[in-house]
Length: 388
Image (cartoon, rainbow, N blue to C red; front, side):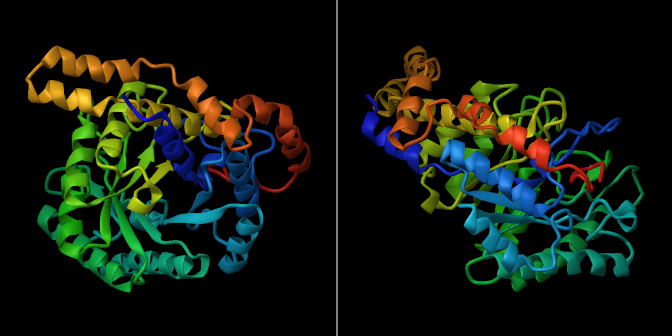
């Protein structure tokens, strides 16, 4: 049986990073749906992230996206965040929205455009230096739409060169998180399409280059927990971008589409004793709340990760190992499913109450008046997000 006191300690220590862009307006390829009270600047995004942390107690950092969160003084922005009780997390780069990047960024055939893209990656490290961030997160939309459009191997060489220059600029306590995506916007060949490509480049770069798993970036039916287990074994799992997908990269609330998958992923984390923040895995959300209110949706996502984690912690690992070693297939599956089918909401309510929090963060947020306040206060100006 799991030690409930140890389970509670692990849940109390858990840390989940929220993304600044999830607080802004977003939408489908057809329409961006604006909401009242949406942040108009990075400071207001951070204020909303601080609200999520106040109600959940486990979301003390917020990731920034450059240039979406560009400011004149990043050190001042970090101090502003600290005053609100949160810190700056990963710095995300953007080399996919400029017209110059139509044929790619760091893999573009034009050396001038490659230089521009790489300079942006280096700029992001400058921002890390000013904010105290330790994580540089890279995602490249680079790829091709047609066979013969560009040389696949040459594009890998260009990618490797840009990654090397960027990696060599990192400080001693900084690291690179290299994300991947099966397809979109490139439909024939994406330059970093899968975890293996990311892993290979990370191995070539050095120990401070790690893989970021976005749970929405795989082919249907992909066994993501296997990828998690493999990268943990190799010491190269640096971060998650948690979200849910029904079809492709849907960016829905984590756990909305397949909570059992989220449980299986978190079990591999628990199995490797990698849940503790000291292990170094960044558990980040990467979501777009298109029709639902932003802050309650993010709180719900944090709670979904907590619930999957609690169930993973409740797996009777001694009984599971005994069944596995005995080749008892049904018993092993039964032990696993017993933990998944446990209602952990009362346990998490206890954990929150012990921490001085409301046992129901969403309900507490609704009662707080924060939503009404930001709707009243944030009138005028340009809302942040895709429609800006």
